[in-house]
Image (cartoon, rainbow, N blue to C red; front, side, top):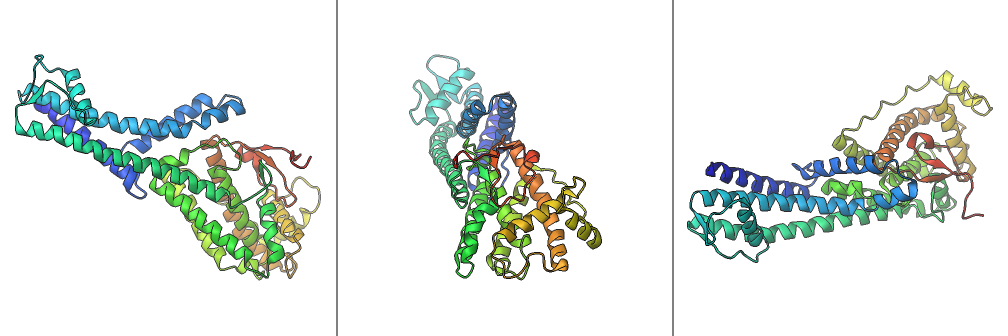
Length: 399
C-alpha cells in the first residue's frame, strides 16, 4: 500500500506541473484540468447570478477575474502539496521517513509538505533514505519554479485584459453605451484622400490580433468582466464586424475605401479570431442563410423602401446598410448604381453577417453581456434583441 501512495503522489505532482506548463507557457493549448475547471466554475457562477438585477449582477461579474485567478492558483497549489504529502506518507510507511513524535500519519505528511513547499521547513522529521532527502529538496526547488509560473500567469492574464482594453479603445465615442459601428466609422470618410482610414484599419488589425493572440495563450482571459458596456469581448467583435460590414459590403467594390490594402488583412484576422473561439468551446454556429436569386433580390430590395412587414429581413437590413453608407456622402459613385455589384455584395454580406450575429449572440449569452444599445445617425439596425441587449432610443449625453 505504501508504494501505491508513492505512485499516486508522483502522478498528482507530475500532472499538476504539466497542467501548469500547458496553461501558462504553451500557445493555444487547452491544458489538462485548470482551463476546464475555470469554465465549469464560470458556468456555476453564471447560473447563480443570472437572475440578479443588472446593477447587482455587474458587481458580481467584476469579481470573476479575481475568482478565476485565485481558484486556478489554489488548484495547482493543492495538487503539488497533496502530491508530495502522499509521497511522504508512503515513504513513512516504508520506514524511510521518521518523526520524533512517533507515527507519521497523513496530516503530519501534509504539514511536512507545506513546510518544504514554503521553504520554511518542518522540524522533527528525519529522512532515513537518501531519496527521501532528495524529495524534500525537490519540493523546495519546485516551489520556486511554481512561483515564477504564477507570476507569469498573472502577468499574462492582465496583459490579455490590457489588450482587450486597447482593442475596445479603437472605437472611441462620447457615449457610455454601445452605438452603431458606422457612427464611429463615419469620421474617417471625409478624409478619404488621406491615409487616416488606412491607419485606422492597421491599428484595428494589430489590436485585434494582439487580443486574440493573448486569448490563445491564456484562455481564462476570455471570462474577464469589466461591467462596462464598451469594455467587453462581444463589444469589440460587434464593432469590428460593423467596420468590415460597412467597408466591404456597404459600398461598391470600386470605392477607394473598399480597396484599402488593409481591409482584406483585417477580414482574415477577424475570421481567424472568431474561428479560434468557436473551435475551442465547440460553439454551434448555424450555416449562412440561403441567398435569394437575383430576380428575387431585386424585387425584395425595391419593396424594402416601403413599409411592408413581409419583406425579407436580410434584404431590408442590407438595404439599410447601403443607405447608411450612402448617407455619409463620400462615395464617388452611387452605392446602388450597379445591380450586379449590389447583388454580389449582398450574397457575400449574408454569409458574413449570419455568422457574426450568431457569434455575438452566443458570446453575449455566454458572458452575460447585456449592454444598452443606442441607435446612431447611421443605423443598419442589427438584431439587438437576438443578442439579448436593451435598446434605448434617447441619448442621455445629448439631452
